[in-house]
Length: 577
Image (cartoon, rainbow, N blue to C red; front, side, top):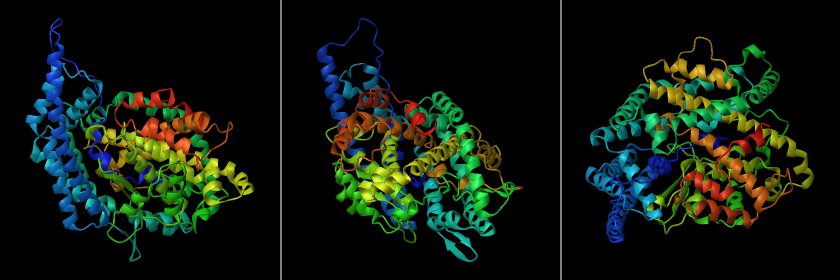
């Protein structure tokens, strides 16, 4: 599940506060309703104001997104400095106090009655609200985050004098059987922690200070509320998912442990974090009898991705041509999708492909983001020409990423025989289930760590991290270890208070997949369709999910698309029950 985790999703991170919809309300006395002419005058005034503001925002955002892209593909000091400067210019626009007062005037007038215009006003208002702090503080946060990002991008683990990039770290942890080497590689990666930890705590405190200036308890609370999410409801959902998954996960975790002790020839009590085939145990270890990597070892992942999306009526040739897909020194080692120019649909994907199942999953995932951007209604105002919410685009990406282990998709796209498809079907599903529950428990750690860290950044964060890892992932801390292992996770610095959206995305991915499977392509009950060459499935997504963009509140969009608001029942039906 590298796709789900290794996301530096620049386009949506910058605009996180845009996912808010609150009904505008006036402050006029009852009985003092504006007449039609007054409403028309106010709406015309707002139209001119909003068009000018969004024209400036669009240009500044494109400059910023381009600069971020340049820094990601070539991590030089100069490129990072240019990206930081471009971000400051964008922030300066939304920090404009005069324009913010204009937005307040429009909201408080009670005369923006047009439904679409009202939504546009609210999203502009909250975009500006998030930056109504001291410009010097905002710029200082941008500069510090840029410095930290640079350290992540340029860090390479060193093992016995040899540099290990993230791909090599992951490959070694996944394939090596030597416990001593595994420990060396894992710890070499974790040596990144002390490089960034002090600056990260400073960044957290700076973010908290700005949140308190805007009237919020801390940055975590502000982030959720400005993205139209109730912190109490999110915590309640995570508690529910904890109860829902912990029993099944405990059984699967025992299955993992039994496999590993036999495979590595060690005792159960000797199992350590470096034995779980991943830096964070955020992806499921390979414990079943099929190795999905073998199906992709000699495949052209770029062509497969292009052929699949073209087959469902979403050609991506232009996106592929604009993307940067293979690893090299100095390049960002993760994966993300960015819409450089929202109106021109200049959509690009950064990956670091090798021929593996994980990167097939990642490619399908990232271009899932890409097609969402591509088919949003470009006639909408700039502020609404984006996904309904951050997690709704994650849901699409996740649904497509899951196809890499879907046996029907593998038959249709890789050309495996019906006999082979039937042979691997049961095990393929077991792999997907293990991936989902492994990720679900990892997401619990990330969500609860960030929530607690922002509530009290002066606590013992090293202890907090391992307490959560031991509780939710059921992995024990190495004896005597007291290192900032939490700081090695890039999302803590660059995509703060975002992780819960991945899990919400997984819930929606199951809900959408169920709807398409049963109502659109009408697959036989229990059959895991891959939608290959099914243009009806693609058209459904374009019409019901992509094209509405941010026209509707996210849960209204989901209800319009599936007949129900967001629910966990399809995720539970698919992976727990």
